[in-house]
Image 1 (cartoon, rainbow, N blue to C red):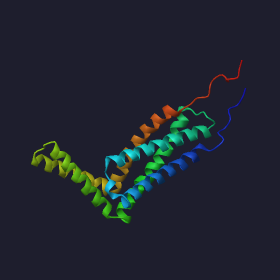
Image 2 (cartoon, rainbow, N blue to C red; image 1 turned 135 degrees about the vertical axis):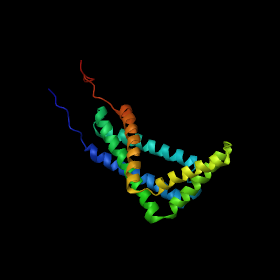
Image 3 (cartoon, helix red, strand yellow; image 1 turned 30 degrees about the vertical axis):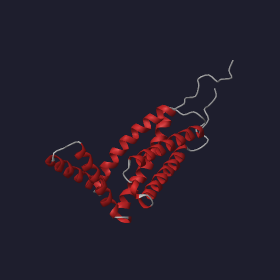
Length: 190
């Protein structure tokens, strides 16, 4: 009976490398936007572009890891390595963003909060919300923004936990799409 070959490369190392590359790309986009094109921060265009780049990188790296696995990997292998890639990338970007706002550019959380509050107020007034309800909604939004942009240690852990759930669902979807099981019968068999 023929034994299955081991993967020619260590897929866990590949997943770590790919997650690190995805994080670096996200950080570069963040820094370029923050310092070169600050008017794009918070824009729908930038959000869509960032998501498209992230998905394109995830597809490319998932296919690359499957190829390095010998062209085949089970759902569980795909899920494990894609999740490692996603969660590492998300963790690095999450920590960088918090450190950036606390130590590198402390004006960043203030600017982001002002921009989000302004767009929220504009949206609520377009919907014709009365003044007292709008004030309450803006007060609630302000409190949420304070927790997101200047999180305590507990808030940071909870926020990352919520992100991890979303990335786990994303990894499940990607694993279902990119799994490729080895055929039972060799193709050249007669």
